[in-house]
Image 1: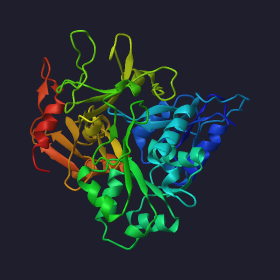
Image 2: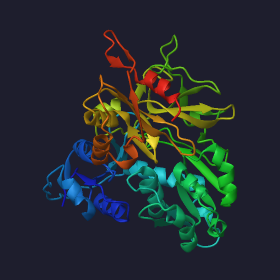
Image 3: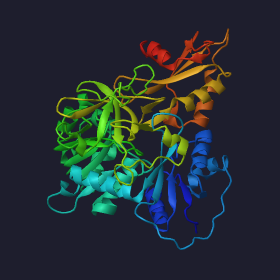
Image 4: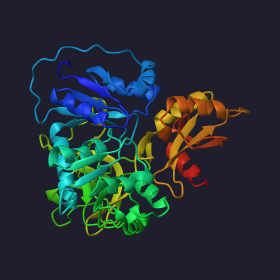
Length: 467
């Protein structure tokens, strides 16, 4: 039994166990911290440390050897009889946001409830089947909000049957949708591309899926994907695990990640704010308040924080310092505050929003956020502590950005690719390992003594070169 308020760390692989175990733990007042089971070494240790009050670890047998190398087993304590409220902590979900190592985002019972319920109602999961039982196909990782809260939440809060798959398989996707009579399915952009790149087969149109919802479907693929697989409705949404600025496109506007009323903007207080292109800092006007973007102007997406509101509040991370960095003050008027999403969006004149880019020192690959600082540290140590800049580069035909490591050559030093590969394989998850390496003669520096590497300039210079 666990003392309240306690934290249980869970990094079971993708199966039913990562969700059933946390659900049962929540019922006795524990707060599970869901960790990406691909993490190794320092990132894994870091996630355990930031899950404060951690009392126990739930882990699959296949991961016990890896876990034994980074920590000792914790003792369990007796559980006192204490009530768990609607606004109490429910689970920690790790997110890198747009900077640094993974942070434990605090998800309260109220937030999980409204997130899953709201999404299900907005996209029409329950009504995806006119006759019989609606069934949702969820092949997403359960340690992320989309799969573990939004997906499984359809069963918990709306009574929808949910099909869970241990690991996504493009070849089995439509066959299983047919087998289980699924009427709705979740996706991320990579899933849609994998499905579309397979040779056509009868199951492509023999399924009963009427609604697909998720994020990352590229505008260039949208129409072709919808026509080939005969999906009547595709709903794209945008949001972050920890944030309060979440939007959705429910009417099928190609490429849009959401919609905000231009006639009644105060109904849902989110906005795009102008930022300095070089520093990424929010720009302010003569009155000291932030400057809103006009239609067609790109800016950082923010959501006004309303304390005590289950949807508009920002509950932050287990780490208070990290939480403070995600809040900007004096936004719309003196004394108010807003959540900084870290993402750059642009809005058209009708109120539809489109994703443009990410700020900070992360990029997205294989559906995961990658911390450049984390990768730079590993690469630098493997190449004799040379200076390194890591960034994401676009790869034709692929979603997101693949990792590129620019390594500064020291004198006549040779690059030991075997040692580098071994270090990356042992310390980083597969999605975080750079796919490309540039052996650079010098990296641009700035500052009073020219000692600071200008990451943005290195990024712009190298990304202009062919991959």
